Amino acid sequence: MTSTLLFAFQSVRRSSSVFSTTQKRRLSLSCIRLLPEVEQALSSGKPVVALESTIVAHGMPYPQNLELAKDVSRILRDKGVIPATMAVKNGVFRAGLHPDELENLSLAGEENRAVKCSSRDLPLIASKYDHLREKISQEENVHWGATTVAATMRLAHAAGISTFVTGGTGGVHRGGELSLDISTDLIELSLTPVVVVSAGVKSILDIKKTLEVLETFGVPTGVWQSTEFPAFFSPVSGAIAPATFDNAMDVARAYLAGQELGMENGMLVAVPNHDPAGASVEIAIQQALEEAAASGIEGRNVTPFILKTVAMKTEGDSLRSNMSLVKQNAKVGAEIASAIAELKRSGGSKPTIHQSQSRIAKRTPPFKPRVVCVGGAVVDVVAKSSSETPMIIGTSNPGVVHRSDGGVGRNVAEVLGRLGKQPLFFTAIGGNDDEGFGVIKRLVTECGVMTTTNSVHAAQEMNTAQYFALLDHKSDLVGGIADMN
Image (cartoon, rainbow, N blue to C red):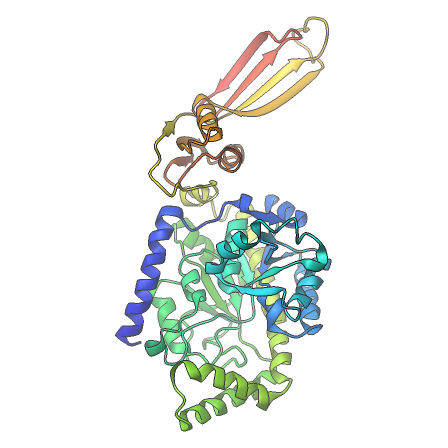
């Protein structure tokens, strides 16, 4: 790789890393609307696989795009995995779509109701439709943001999904050292801890430079049961695989080991495409490359020329091969997601401080806060007798139990937040339960309180503080338990 390309990519990645350090580049889970079955699967530790929506809206013509989406979902479900198509619907980030929504999305590209949405576009498309949601709430007027690999990774991680299946990933374009045409997918892979299962990188790109970029920024990259990195349509590229994964457990162990080390980057698993139709497409690509060189076509003009030429030469082979490789990737991705879920259930990957901290809802203030609040966050449980007669000690009494968020520090922060003061809250919660994470999430999303990765500490091997109060029928305190360890 030339020094120009490396310097340029370092500059882009360095600026992104600064943003990552201050905000961890994670959206709060509250920003994403999860399909109920996706939310249930995640909460119960079942495997979920994220799917991109660009391939549905723009990657293929209708009805082949819808057929492929249904086939991929069926493949995942047959293996006990829940599919979650990531998309932006009328400005709302979505993780999982209903069948009728998937069909609407498959028509949206041809009807000009869908725009390609990379990670940089997520806040733009959300703000664009924010004030129009009531006007475009009707199903026939739905507008979509079709997520690319980069945007899908971002939303998947924010939703808590660790495995993502796609067709192919972007890379460094030929002549990238001059044009600086480098896919955002590579930047996102260096910043977002999601396992991406793809058929590698198309040979119209510079595969060897792409692998160098992935190596430079520490993205674990391996090939599924092969020692050669695939070229999307073909299992052969001439590039040696950085690593080989023999099975799904190999991938799962490597991914979770990276999580325990606190690594921020994702992982790329390239699956060779052995579909016969892909061979003719790869031959056409190589012919187009030779024609481009003979015609003196260089830089940014190379890729459009190759795409147009290959489409003319291959007719339907590229579509057939594309559909085949996505299905194959889905099978591998399902195995990987299941392996990761199995290791987590068996304790093969014990949650680390880094992982617990990543679950904390965060809203970083865009300015230096004027008010800083430091104090406890407690779960209050109040049990009150509903009998009209005095309680009978030593036996069960009818009553009502109420749970609420408490703690003096949390309560003060809530009041300040609701008054619009946007206080920065410092506290500690337990890393062993979900209670504390819920307290912080509600404080951030409902009360306008600010938190950062460093302001909320999730203590390992500890539970969130709780206070239990027992009241009689007159609401007088009978007794209380304060678990503040």
